[in-house]
Length: 580
Image (spheres, rainbow, N blue to C red):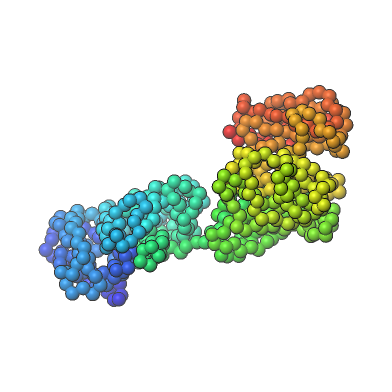
């Protein structure tokens, strides 16, 4: 193929010659974005004269003068054509004097030989024309418009990652051209291409370095095939930019995995923590037993995950660092677990290391199988022995799990289950829990043992419990098994226990469980974050046993609320989140 610079010279000379016949001129840039392999190289004729020879796919001309005020015929012929009689497509256009245009050749020569457009758009070879085109930008910014030029791609949005609410293309179908968009000339724009009706699913991501384009303009165009194998093995999908001088640059693709992070490190010095990702703050004041939703994270490169105390000043304050490399397209759950100084806490009875670490589950699931609930289980309690988890009258879900063990995925119908936590013998009951999964059909969860069996031997850290994290970041506690509302358990407890309300977040009903080792006068009250009492659930003498009380917050606004249990000399406060 002849150098593009030579083609530009030919085009300029020929058009200049043509323009001697015309008093009126317009400005025109031509871009070749027709992904048909048969059109990988074309000759372009203007009014019967060849002006571009062997014009390559994803090539562009610079802006040149073109005849205005009279119809002109633009003919497209195969590479190295003999004359204008070899043209396979012809287009007649009339340009307006002193106007500026970009003409983009797009589509395929024989639509029947290619994948049809999913939105029913015609994919026949055509010219997409943008009038009022710009050769320069606004001040020091970059001006560009976007063309959806991929024939087999559906309606999409193009979003700028972490620059809300900057949407470059909204519900753009094949052939759609946006208005001009003006942005600062930065180097680290990440462009996410998503389905038009689902911005949570990323089809592809690209890095757009605009740092050298301040004061300039560009044409950004989606190009190629999402599925080359169904399109004669044509060029694969990508995003490109054509500059006014004819330079075409490709935005390199960015690899992503999906990642959920759960904080299950019960060390009292690790509540909360700051999480740094490659030196930048990722999670600020991330609380014990909190979880993120599944987020996109860079894949194919080594990531440094740093854990620092809450309200840290910078990445230099990190206490622990972990290096991980995520696989492109894979989905992960990373669970921070353990203690910062194992010598300051009870040893694990099975001899497992309790040093703070990341337990990572790959091929994690964001949804369930069919209408079932899919979950895996982590034994995350550092001072707890090997245990079994039995769904009463159903099946053994976890067999001989020691600290740090992660099960495979378990699929169960959405229903309410009683989970018996036993020692490894399968018969010695440690505790029972109520797991109401009836509303989670089609969903997924992480079930994790959390906290200390013996808080008194572990710096009075949080007590043992069985928790779940949903794919959206919701965390709740499975309440300890009780017989009925306000009914005393047949087993007298040995300690005061106030559990986390369930569900949490809630709307508008939730349940609060507690146990009493002695007969006591008990108050259970709810306060807003300003300390004002909003509800009294208990205010009377109770005998030793286990209780649960329902709280209805239909008359309250969304927000964080506190509930406090007082019984004799015992007092404890927990937080809950009303989310309407």
